[in-house]
Image (cartoon, rainbow, N blue to C red):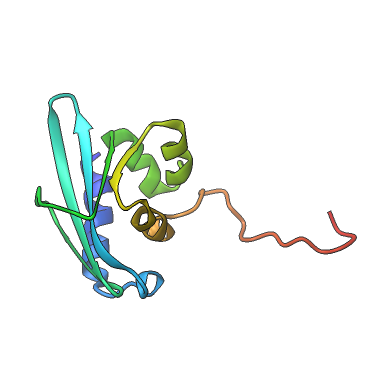
Length: 122
């Protein structure tokens, strides 16, 4: 968990401005539960400006999951909204923030880009 997850949050923090979150503001805390231990990652977004810390502070939205599932999310092996619908993740607070932030997570490693429907082509 530590390597991939830490790298994801460090990269996100170093970006500073994320254009995909230009219309987003709020604080989102990820609580990664492993037995009795919980690791916290706080992501603060102010119209695309992103700051990350490991603080256990109040947030508009709190996402709870296992470190293993979160690693699958940041590597694109798992989809966050699907995991949420299955009950593998919990969300308290404003769920819209989760939907907005989900854009910065990578897609499946085998994806070949968007497929568009064209009349007569299947």
